[in-house]
Length: 377
Picture 1: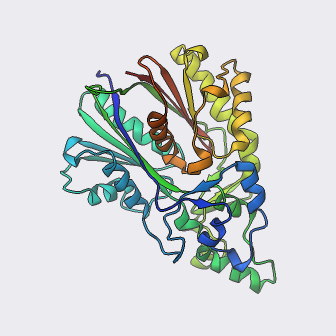
Picture 2: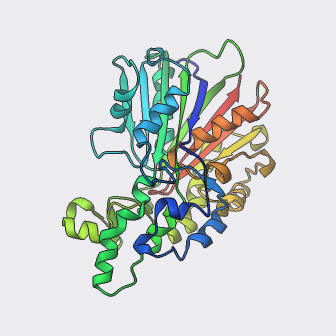
Picture 3: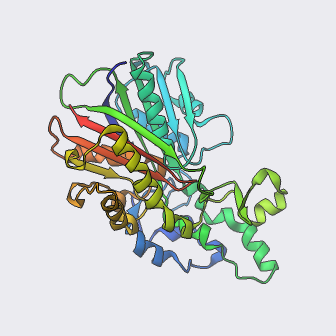
């Protein structure tokens, strides 16, 4: 087995930042009615600005998720001939099929044939792509790999996508507004992409990150669906968009992204921190005082102190002064968030050889978690 290093990290955030005051004008008002929960959600999540692949003046789409990923790879500053594996993650691809990976491959400039992997899911999809690239190099099958993750949440959160549901409610003389489980995520998610190049050699100049391990775990055997798209939860059963008529699918906005917020709040720390990290601490004999930095991806500042409480509950406290996240200024870009956090972290921190960085990515889709341990080389 070979050692694996992160040699290059990049990110791409489309267009100019969008403030809290601008975002409803950019996404549009559902049913021409201002959201009743937008300000409350923004106070809780602490996000001050984010990026959308939408022209703020014309409201026209500027990038697809595929194009965001391609731009992040270009920002690595390498040729497509410099790697032989491409692993791509996203929560919501631009198409149902083919896989998002081959769509990205197809848009790369002068790309040769290569191994391509598409990872689906929610936030952990980006780390699943990272792990595939890591394993491809670690086994010695490949010498260099690229992992990339992108999100274009705005494409599905635009008000136009809810017209059929609003029209149906107007016929029923109900309020022309969407449910909280859909409106909640309109003020939580945003667009962006990030990429890394991995190889079996550290950089000759400057620093690299040695990847000690990447550990993913799912608790779907214990937990129901919490965050989803392409379906509905009815009487505790998940109903696929394939199982209903086109009329029902549109009337209930089956393709919108939805979140069971109560289920999320009650279980995200317990499953993705306490249970997941406890097994990792035992598996790798990990010690909290050996961690120099924690890079957590959390969806909202609402969870910041709850994350600390979860660490304390398993006797693995990492003081918040050692944490770094850019949620406030870059928004919640889902599976791409950890890449975007890493890129700013290496650009703004004075890192020293031997320092250890623990990355944490939770996922509420059906409660999964990923931790990755890096060492500065």
